[in-house]
Figure 1 (cartoon, chains in turn green, orange):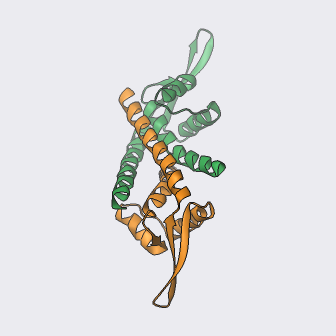
Figure 2 (cartoon, rainbow over the protein chains, first blue to last red):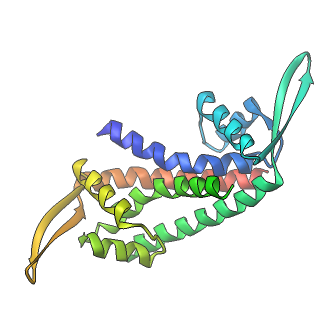
Figure 3 (cartoon, rainbow over the protein chains, first blue to last red):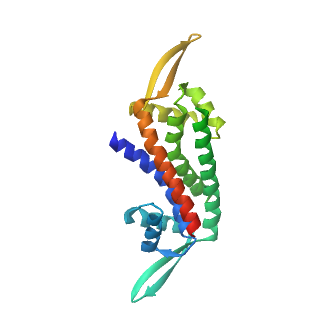
Length: 109
Length: 109
C-alpha cells in the first residue's frame, strides 16, 4: 500500500505546487532562494521537480525573468507576471472553494 | 492560455478528489448517490471520472462494497474501509499542512 499511498500524497501535493510557486514569486527569487522560501513553509521540493516547473510557468508567460551577474556568477531571477497574478487569483479561488467543499463534506458525514 | 489554465485547475482538483471520495463514503453510497453528495458540496465530477476512481480505491482495499437488489435493479454500494480511514487520516493531515503552507507563504510575500 505504501507505494500507492505515496502516489496519492504526491497527487495531492502536485496541484498545490503551482499555487505555492506563483505565490512565492510575487517576490523576485532565483532558483535556490525560491526553494529555500518554499522549505520555510514546509514545502520540500526537489530541484529536479521545482526547476522544470518554474521553466514551464515561464513558458506560459506566468513568470517574468532576468539574468543577473553576481560575483561572477550568473543567476536567473523570476517573478510572477501580471498574467501570472491573474491565474493565481483563479487558482486561489478554486483552492478556497475546494477547501470549503472538503469542510462541508466532512460535516455532512 | 485558457487550455493551460484549465489543465492547472484540473491538477489542483484531482488530488482533492480522493480525499473527497474517501470522506463522502464514510456513509455508504452507490455511484449515483455519491455523485449527488459531491455535487451538494460543489464538487461536480463526471461519471467517467468518478466511477473509475471508486473502482481504483476499491482495488486498493480502501473501500468495501456490496451488491444490493432494489426493485429489481442491482446497485453496488461502497463504504470507506478501515484501511481507507487510515489513509484518509494521512491525506487529511497532508491537506491541512499544505493549507498552512499556502497561508504562510501568502503572509510572507
